[in-house]
Length: 88
Figure 1 (tube, one colour):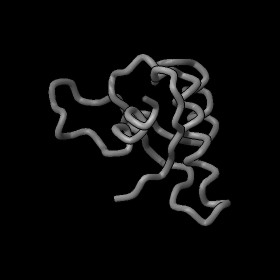
Figure 2 (cartoon, one colour):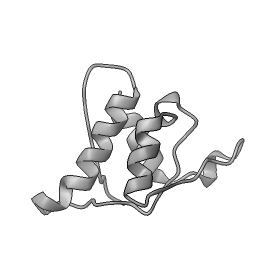
Figure 3 (cartoon, helix red, strand yellow):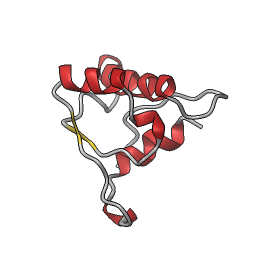
Figure 4 (cartoon, one colour):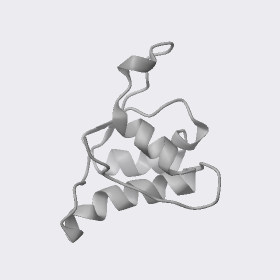
């Protein structure tokens, strides 16, 4: 396991902070760090993952957003937890 994208600020999680995290994740290989364009993102049910800009970017980059299974926290991917909690 490794961190593939970070964005740290003093604002609460939002669409903007989520997009900054994804931007970092996509550009990390330019700095010889782990990351890149994921094929799948399984976010939690946070409102910051439900916006048109994120959907548009993921669609253009061929990133599939799969909704999490309800009431099954053990089935989520670690990436969504990293994206969710780094934005605090």
